[in-house]
Length: 378
Ligand code: FES
Ligand SMILES: [Fe+2]
Image (cartoon, rainbow, N blue to C red; front, side, top):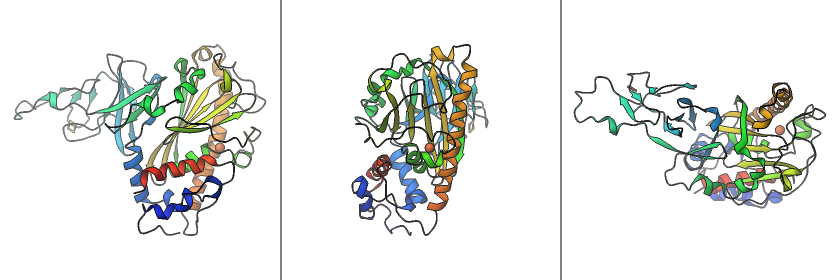
């Protein structure tokens, strides 16, 4: 299928705009086009709150990690004052990337000419710059990037005019409050490089239609249902499934006790929430896990899978032994999703790919496609 001359003409997407069971899927070029991707970066990833993990990744002053988010180098660092900050990871001298990887440092030192920044980004050392006319170190701090947290989860936003994180999330913190995320620790982060568009993976995460086929050998016994999406009052959409037993462990295996503060729906099933644009939270009886998708190009995506358990569970003597069963479940099911997502990308790249139709089990595939169109079209 060839893309329309004007990629952002709403008329080209009329079939996607119809109600879920009458609609077509996004056209294949939305998953392959450089221009469509560039528009998503400009209108979505540089505008929205983007999830970047938990603050317990950097518990002490000087702990940092660097990331490139949608092409923007960022360093996240905890200051001497205990505050976690995101800074543009671009040196104010001649622009080199200052920090790489992750670790602990006393200061942020650029590897090119050793300009050195304090943990809050202020420029402290600039060798040989005394003769430079009118140069004042105070004017050359690393530029701050908005970082706000909710219950230990960090989000960054590149847009100075964006609403606050809590305004963006709306009623989600209240809805998920029984999980008591504040009292959790992320015990494992696993990273994967995917050869697919970010939307492919988000769509996969938000539908259970594929579970009996893709997860035939692992979680296929998990009950699926045709419930409509949960009501949303914020920058998210989601599904709730009523069932017994943790969703984070393979059928028949013994796990941890349940989170004691669960009430209402949270005590009767699991929530699968997509925090727009590209983060899935899986919240079940004994833990939460996330799928964090960072776009790296129209057909490249970095996936981070984070696993978080209540601190009281992490403190148990048998934690390492029992948690291995959870990790095994994720290792298997995530690998299965990764393979099928890359394979979908290959099929969609064909000149013979055409828009498809959606089953009753894929309402959020429709929701995500329309959410994207709401932002990228003219
Ligand atoms: S580019 Fe960083 S010190 Fe020169
Ligand atoms: Fe899956």
